[in-house]
Every structure is written in C-alpha cells, then in structure tokens.
Length: 92
Image (cartoon, rainbow, N blue to C red; front, side, top):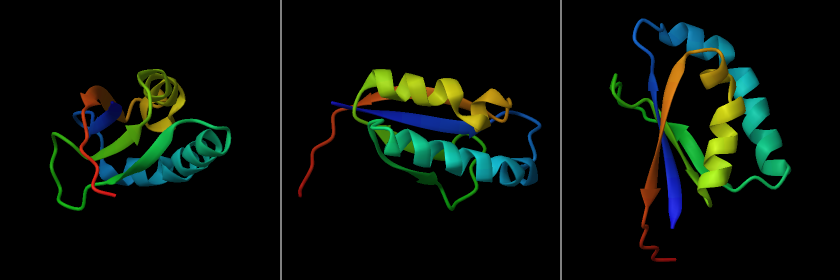
C-alpha cells in the first residue's frame, strides 16, 4: 500500500505566489528525501485544474503526514492536501 497526497491550491491563491514559494518547497522535499523520508515521486499536473494541482506518492501514511505538516506550500496556506490510500499494481 502506498499513499498519495493530492494538493489543490486554496481558493484565491494566485499561481504566481506558488511559484515564489516553490524554491522553499523544492529544498524541503530534497531534504525530506535525503533524510530517509519515504517519498517515491511528486510533481505538478500540466493541465490546469483548480481541484488538483499536484500530487506526491509516499511509502507510508506517516511519511505523507510528516511531509505535509512541514511543506511550505501547506505551511504558508497556499495548498490544501488530501491523503489517499493507493493500492498500486506495479508492472516493473
């Protein structure tokens, strides 16, 4: 079982503000991963959709919760996260 964090921009947040915060978000996810956090993948969706702007995949709920607790996008009130359990079927 993996856990997906779906991010949506909060109502009224301009995407340009998210771009300003992105360098802190990037530094945070790089440090999280380097510190052993179970971050498998993350990224923004290319198609503009106000309901979902990006997602991350984690190896445990605990890591997903720990990540969103300190992510600058969430801490600065830009994004609303939602954790979903994901029963992925892998073809690797």
